[in-house]
Length: 249
Image (cartoon, rainbow, N blue to C red; front, side, top):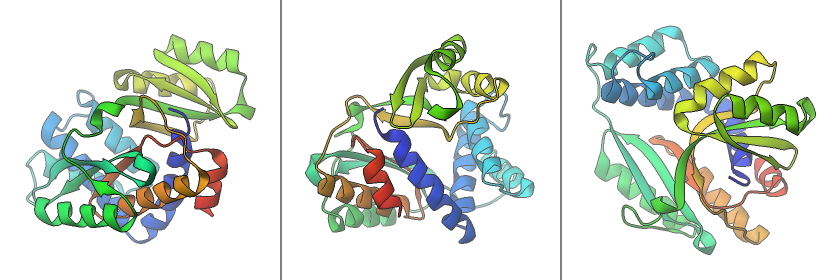
């Protein structure tokens, strides 16, 4: 998981800009629609939907927008038909990259994503070419100045977390996605507010790269993330705080 929380921080800062352009709400709505379609409209029994709604609320998405997205996903309101697709490929330096999209036009989106890969020095591969290098996990990042490692370890493990590691100025906690809510609640109960709280795809083995290559990979990730249909972008790159700060400027 090394460095992944730094990419999440970059995305968070970018999200404020996207919100002003209305792009963020559009992406959040699509995530809710897809979740409700596949798992039903009750977030108590649909983890994916509950997570999507929580993210929308954190972004201050209007309640009516959230409710309408749930209804559309459940087939109670008419609207565009979306499908969920994951594209895989390689960035500069051979770093593995995955991008999850929700689109109403598979052919258009595939061509546009392929063009972004090529423009940024990478290439899109076939389905499954890099997916095996990732595993789905819940991830929390807690400011190290807010607690000590032993106390946080006890809180996290008692709630069902798998691991806790120091990553720069933060502690990164990982868990099975099904334990995400329990770990989140435990942190809140103990007065800890994570700077990152998401269900993500973490690299099984993070890859170190020269600073110049790392910056190029991050530029590719940012370009992919900026696509209207993109929901999430992942890579096996070990993103250091220094590189993240340079790109985030």
